[in-house]
Image 1 (cartoon, rainbow, N blue to C red):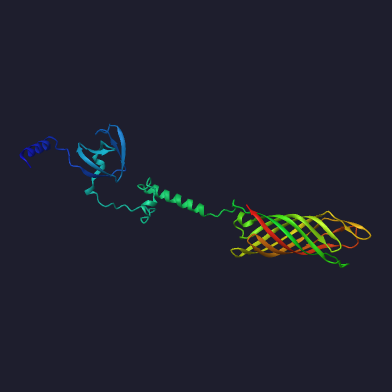
Image 2 (cartoon, helix red, strand yellow):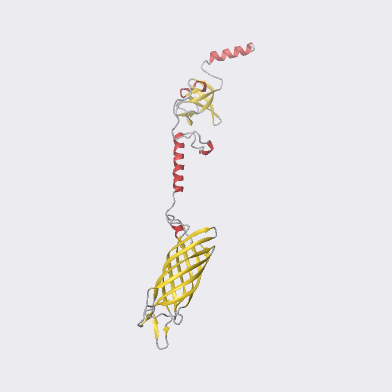
Length: 309
């Protein structure tokens, strides 16, 4: 060092003994410390620094430290800071809700510095995850299928007094299927309701009766045995309104409303199904006769699902 520089250094040291010119890193030891625009406790507060933040102090004078804050020289009281070299390892235990193995990328940067906020954030995420995992009792993605059916087979009267000759019964209808398991998730998969409306010809070979019919199968079940094939079964009943009479060589008999039991079992392949159905009537089909006749039949039903929505 040149003699002139020595003289300047000694002069400044004697003139300003309390000023520190070297830039040193200091750590904030108070919870929140005000940053002021002038080295005075009455000066304007322009910001705050939080505990454990590190600031680069360029000058200390009369209890005030000068450092750069948001691009401008600002001031903070020295009683709230300590040199980084003097700060010992904190003995405070980490917050019990902080997962030391969790990556920083998984934590919202806005809450990372504050353990309490971090804990609240994780608890909120856990609650959201639990809500997502709750299986709703009623779902909005119900499945309704529109189908057409055609059937034919054995048809006759059941009677204790006479034995009529059997005939061919046949008919067709349109139907709607509603999949229970798509609406109420607590029920087993494959349960469905089916409602059919259409035409049917029942009776014996000599005395056919024509009906407009409604079938309701409250219990239907579909069990898959392969990706494209299922076993199906259904149980329900029917109500049929007649629009023809029983005519004999001597007399004509008005026919009554018919109702009965229906059950079927079969195979479904993709949209096409083949179901063997048995029907048993409970109402006397004619009015004014001495012999009571009840419809019964065994049909093969071919059903095709046109659309599902």
